[in-house]
Structures are given as C-alpha cells and as structure tokens.
Image (tube, rainbow, N blue to C red; front, side, top):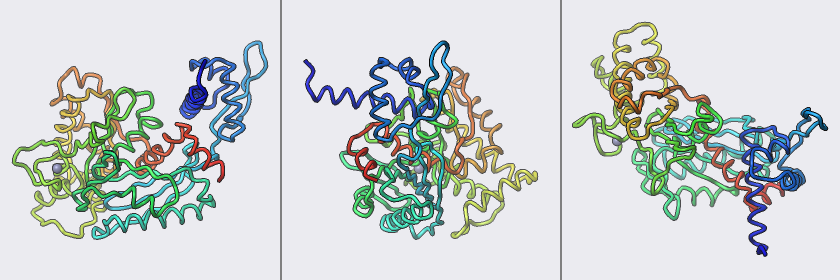
Length: 406
Ligand SMILES: [Zn+2]
C-alpha cells in the first residue's frame, strides 16, 4: 500500500507536469494534456479540477473535436499572481512587472552613478522600485509571487547565496539575506546572463533548441549555456564566465585582475578604449558608455573609417572568443544580447559569423546559427522573472498558499 506521503508527492508531481506543460504550450484541452504526458484522462480531470478550483488554471474557450462534444481549453490563469524581474546592471537598474502570461504590465528604470554601486544602495532602490511598480500598476504587493534579480558578477549557490563582483569591490556579499530582511516576498538571484539564457531558451530566440549559448554584452560580458534544455551551472553556479576567457596573451588588463580577457576588448569600455587608441584621444572618466557606443554605430553606418575599423576589430575579438566557446560546447545556436550587443549586433553580425567559421572546428560550427536576442532590452528582466516562474511551476505548497491569500 502507498504511504500518505507518497500519495501527496504524486499529486504534487502531477500538478507540476500539468502546470509546466500549460505554461509552455497553452491553451490545451484535457485530452491533449493526457496525450502529451503520461497522465491518464481521469488523472488529468482530477488534477486540472483541483488547479481550476485553486484559481491557478482558467478556462479559455472551446475547441471542436471530431465526432464528440467540443472540448474546453485550459490555460494558466494570467492574473493568478505576478512576477517581478529586476535587471541590476552597472549603468542602470530596471524593474519590470509581468503577469503569468509574461505580459509586461509596468516598468521602472533608474540610471546609476558609478559611485552608487554599493549593496545597501541597490537594496534601497529595489525596495522602493517594487513599491512604485506595485502602486503604478495597481497590483497589491501580496499578489506578487516573487522577485527575481539578474546581477553582474558571480552568484554562488554554495550553501548560501553570495555575489562576487570585483568591479564593484563586492566580495561574497550576502545580497539575498540583505534583500530578504527588507522585502517581504520570495527573492531569487542569479547571474544576469544566466537569467537571460533562461528567458531566451524558454520563450525567445531559443524556443525548442536543446543546446545553445546566450551572450550578454554590456559593460561586462557573460554567457548562459543551455545544454539539453537546462542551464549549465557548474559546481557552484559560476559556469559561463566566458567574458574572462583569454584571447590575447600579454593583452590589456581586465577588471577581473587578469589580462587579455574577451571582456577587455569587446565589453563596452573595451570597445571605447579601442576607439580612443585609434583616434589618439584619452578616455574620459565620466564617459557615458551608451551614448558613445550609439555614436560609434551611427558613425559606422555613415562609413566613418575609424568606426568601421573599431567594429571590425570587435567582431574579430568576439569571433575568436566565440569560436573557443563553440569548440567547447558545440551549441546549435548562439544568441547575442545585452545593451551593447543589441547596439552593435547588426553592424558586426556578418564579420562575427565569418570569424567564428574561420576559428572554430568545422564539425562544431557546421550547423551553428548566430542570432540576436528576441527580448531586446527586456531580456534580463524577463529572465529574472523566469526565476520566479520556475519556482511557481514547482507547485510548492508554501508558495501557492501565499499567493492564494493575496
Ligand atoms: Zn577578465
């Protein structure tokens, strides 16, 4: 005879199966759910009945069936609860609020002074941004299922969550604990490139692709690697620090303390440094990176020879770095995103493809596609929201109860 605990686990598992399937393939009829899973029609009726009663699922219409009654279509109820995704960048902080159908209902963006990169400052900004977002969208804080945050730097999951971000002088900052002390919501933190990889793989450019890499090009550079449909994390979640792989021995110093890293050449400050070297100007301390890169791309389009030279060099460095990544992971797709990636992406794409093909091993690169990310400037917020969605889809009872009370 099955123990009561076993029965409960099976029920939870069945809920997870149905919620996951509907999240990625809704709307579906009960019959389709049964056909696409190992669950019998009777089990699907029970599980969906329970989820409908809890308000997690909604009926969304009818579909004709051959020789039978029309079938009811089910979805995850879009307004059962809400997700907040935060993109904690080096130049900005962006908060976005989504419903469970991943529709963006509100957003707030703040610029950040370089001296503002302290953990206390970010905790304050996130906490006040959260309140502002809830009030501007008219959504009660109790209806928010959780807040996901994508951060630059290494987010270690090593018994506790800590962040190491050398450029901010953060060494193993226990940011999660700090946030949880201030915010009365479940909080999930991961590296921004990993969060972005999750969004692009689940709902964006990589939908249906099993092996892919998502490249985040901003002030810093990171990568999220998806292998066989799951995020590759490594032993302590620091896999994907591709920006600090070396492409030039005895090369430029990098913010990580080493030298010759991809980031030192193809991160926004690296690109700007190439531009200054070429034009003989010295770099300005308070330079607005976004404005400078935008101007560079405009000059490139106008045929300016320095701009052409700098973006070709950037494509060359990135192409060499990407070829190393392709040789190691053999992805089917590489997606380029991040604010700088989105600005220069189109301009460098042809050259980038050429250099990857030149430097990667032919069998690894033979079927490789390189594309731009689909969620644009929202990709990290969307990915951070997916960290919350992932927990929601686990049908965790505590998580559910909290949202039902809201
Ligand atoms: Zn480095």
